Image (cartoon, rainbow, N blue to C red):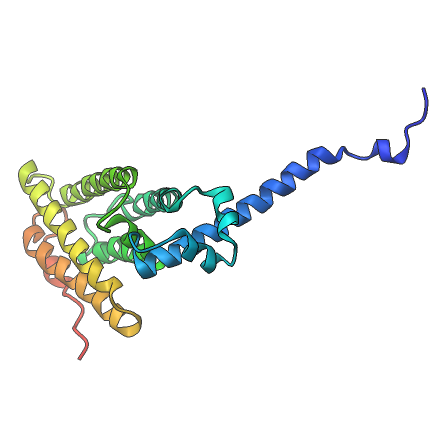
Length: 234
């Protein structure tokens, strides 16, 4: 057989180029999604434009259109990734609860995870609560909220195993509503003031739940007074 030349012995170039192109494409997509997150957070979904997102990303509108046909496609891709991350967050936040632990300690662990996620990704709130959210995003967000409410019910039920289901549902809905109302205030502030509002949100939820749960949870006799709210800052 004739000897192969060094060029013939090399790995075929066509197998390498697609991998490099794919890696570059993923980096470009991440760059565009980061830019979209900044623009959506700053201006809201309705006022955002593909031109503004392209400027933020430092690319031409033509480059953006190679990957996303419009801002709705960008928003859907971005929200899908964030919802996936949020599902991981609530999976960790609602790990099995030790009902003998102070209620304050449990609330801090759960609420801190969700507030931290939303503070790290303010675009999540901007996209999910805007007036013109694309239908597909609204459906995914509604499904996520239903799941979150269900997990909150499970948490409340673990503290109130003998309570009627209607009471557990009502308590969970109120707790979730207090969290959502507080979240908007948290995101409207920054720095030390944001931290103060985070503490206030946790105080409000605790002050609502502590009288409801009281000594009714298994193993909580005598613990209700041990979990006093953190003092307000002067």
